[in-house]
Image (tube, rainbow over all chains, first blue to last red; front, side):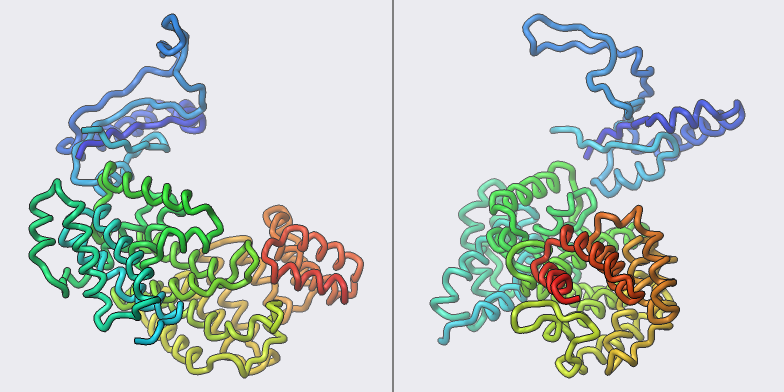
Length: 113
Length: 398
């Protein structure tokens, strides 16, 4: 069973990260690296996304395609990255997600088909 | 064959539905399909048994119905079809299969309302219509919850199994919360025209007893079972002839079931001996202090306050602090208790019992005017008819 873990940043998390000094931030990044290493046999693909101010949204359901700046939903919680995992079931996906050491929200979504 | 009463029907269906569900999941290999078949069998039983009487072997009767439906419906999976066709009742699934059933129904990835509805349908054999009546929601709403939950179980691959040792604690907490919610809903429902809908309290006790039988070494399971039994042992004294609430200090304690209270006390002691205290064990111990007092005047309030302190350490909550303040009134007097209660104003301002408790303490302190204002506030917030009538009575007479 394949799932995508969507990593979601909150304003508090961004502020905490910004308040860290260099060594602290390096340790935080190292924890994330370690997490990917620990679960590499389950992770089939992963990516970190550029911040939402780099996003461009295209709407195709309003006549002419409509291009606009920013993410498709305006919100304070934003998807900052994802990992695709292959595991037995939701409990295993939850177990992996629970050990995620960075941003405070993870959405777990099964991949169709 | 004599015609069964409604209560007999409910009991027999409940005794067999979970086992049937576990057997069918085992045979059919699919939770959702098995669940549908159980529901068919329950519906058939509720149609036939009131007229024809309860058969000698109700489990076999229900299995026969479920199997016939199953052979009609399950065309896709030849493997499961063959298995279903070849196996006669009794089907012997692994002993812990009902546990798997319960943990699947109460998976935290399902919303609470769906956990409740699924558990009632699959483990207790309630129909969608019965669940809808008990929770005062339209049948279609319950139906949608069930459908959506089953779809999620299959699409998101929620496993049919007992959680691993790492997860067991938190997953068990989830199951106990569902059972406790059912009990509270049954014991004192918060809407509708009836103060007590006895069915759900029955189902909650049944589930807690089943869970205790399946997990005898989990002290919190024993704690919840004892808590439910202690409440139910005193249920007949809680309402007067007009369905009005009788408060604890005015209850006729000769109506309490002493034997059931003693048995629950032993259950608490056994659980406590394991040295793993928890919120349900502590709540049960508090209720036991009340239940074991033969007169209101003999209540051990000091012990109750100590138990509340322990409970607050494990599970801090403003409602628990409110309850502790009530006990404190008998240890340290009404003004100390009122100060404790007033400190909770920010968190509990919208809770009717906060105002009702304040009213009682203010009345103790001789402040009839403020007491009245607090009672009026409580009445405006209360939804249970029996509680409303008690408050109205107090406003009329106090």
